[in-house]
Image 1 (cartoon, rainbow, N blue to C red):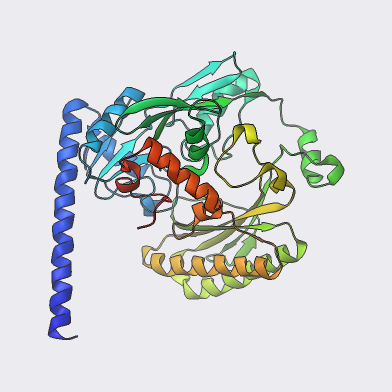
Image 2: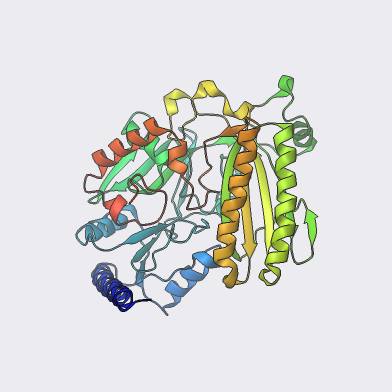
Length: 429
């Protein structure tokens, strides 16, 4: 390396350190301001609340350490937080509901402020109309247990530890927008924002209450078994039903199985969507086995587990209750598409970079298989997507442009584009 190259690298390093220090100082100023407004609800490294929050993220690799953590108790609290951060536009922040996303920085900020919504977990059952109001900090298990005594339920996550916020369809959302404005959004009020939020993630504001439709539910019995066994038979097809199956390879025991288990380890995710095809499924399974055996040899000490989960894409929503996922009701995705989630779980942090590359290669191989079989589809399920995947692009150009217009309308300063660093963004830097 020449002297000039060394000098250039040193200057870049010093500039980066200076920018880092400036950002850290701005974040600390914001933390101090918030602490004076919310005494007892802003925590710092080594505080018990802070450490408990960091350790509660589902996956080790996503446990970042923000400058401080603010824990609002109400919608008004969130509005004040947004007002403060709006005046400090150099401060990055993240929004955390359940902390279950596997992508680094999607629900936490290493050098900024994390808004932890876990204290906003109230549940209110309404009989007219038949709905419940739930805070974004609630977990699915608590919600289901609260509804079970009434023999009612809602359409929600299958993992009880996952939080409600992030990726959910409802009948109404209460949202805090810049610079601290509180609005309701549904199919008739702020309908464009309502559609954009369903698939648009953290690009517009912070959802502080979710109103969800409930339905009657009886006990699970043999009828469910029969329904599952005939799931795709045309004469018995149920557009409201859903299933998932999977296959797994444990490199430690060198065994294949159908037991999909998520552990508290580091993890990479990726996803593809494809048309139901026997040929494609056989080729995907063969690629899974081939890749698993190869990675077992390359990452002997990583305690690696490779899992694939296949589930049917559900029904598209009607035009009267639109979202931003890019499925037109006339396309009937429920009748033809599968989603495949890929998970690499591992314990050795040294393997992080290599396995991150490996899962990209594997996902692209599976996508290529689907293309060769004319079974590929551009949609990507964002809860399984890696941060390198173009989820919003999968919705289609028209949808993305529509969401950008919504962003301009409700967040003219682009606060949620500039200061919220994590997530799939409407504008690529």
